[in-house]
Length: 404
Image 1 (cartoon, rainbow, N blue to C red):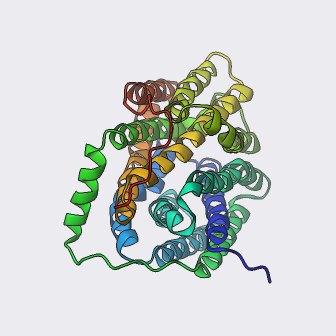
Image 2 (image 1 turned 90 degrees about the horizontal axis):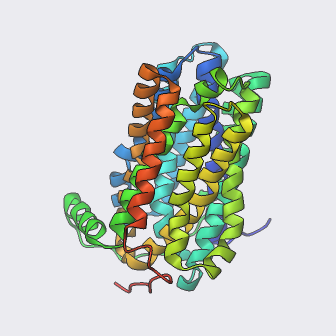
């Protein structure tokens, strides 16, 4: 039997968990539209509820990540995803699955993703040397990008050919693999933190984040990016079916271009990081988002799956550099005992996804999907302006790690 290092277990479990998430996230709106008859408003509300845990659970899970076992936290949350996916599968097979139940179970399953988002960044510095942080983050993101590349296309094909049950079954199996890998991870011991009220810990992490000249603009950019992206995500599936004339498999293929872009960006990241100033690397992602939004708007006048796929490719390729570089920035400037809380605060920026999905559902359901695309484009423009005007842009290299 092959023995895996703790970091390798984390990376492989991340691949399995992210694959489960992407298959389930892509299958859910397709099942909602094709099997349950949902429209733009329904799929928008589905996206909102599936991403609401990022807003509600990030801070509590961040506190647990700083004060307890990060491995146990991720195992428990991922096991909850297994149960939620198994319930989706059973309900679908019995013909009892409804849009509210699909959204509720998606909410429960997203807890695994939130736990990974707040626990893994604080665990990585304990598993690898500090001078290897950027490479370790790139490997984590490369594993994640593979899931983004294959998950939506596979889910689209499964739903189009055989219905939703096989997609939910595959997602549950992948999530179970992640649980098994995490269960065998040896986590280094940490000195216990002094007993304090949870609100004290939250205030401490918030003060550090929002008073830091580099972390604050990164947080705001991430907040607006996630809002804009999920305005787009909320309406894209019904827009692609109704306006672009795409079948389920073709919709999955265009969504998979997002993952393909992430793979391309992750593979190119080491060379880009070596050749460009650190601040420029961070800014590439927001700039790519603006270009991607413009390409998606072109599909209003030129309905083409190629343009839609190109837009998702750009949204994946640029922001993956953002993730790798900003996580490395965070791990460098944040004290180790505070990484869970600060990562949780950044995860609340991801919690803007349900807000974006709600905006997309409202704009798309009231004024049409095309209006929602314009709203998304305005958001992408704003997030680029925030980071380009910040002190992050002039950074020439990664900041030196802090010791305490």
